[in-house]
Image (cartoon, rainbow, N blue to C red):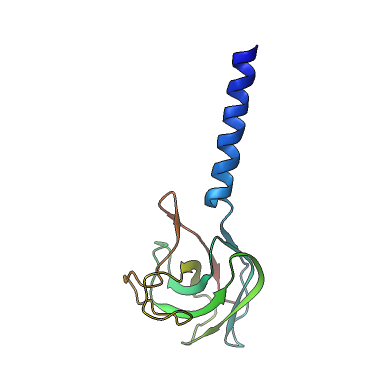
Length: 136
């Protein structure tokens, strides 16, 4: 009985640590109109200050060029609005992704370009922290 109880406590402690180490990171957003030049996420969870980055994407679900970004805080941020820097048409697929504020030369300046390491994408278990939407 003692061994079983000890094993249960170890498993519970391990599960709690992994939940705190990034498994709660996410982006929550829905398909939306973009005619106002803005894309919004309902909620973003991040471990550190960084960026919500809007990438073009398609059915292959690979991140394409950046078409907007907005700063985010560590923890939960609600109603994050990113101003689009390019035209996006109804029907275009967009990937809303969490990027870090790491590796660049300037703090508070978004320095990422596709494939660069500066202010790059955040990954958890080698998966991007992101969601996709379709512009309306």
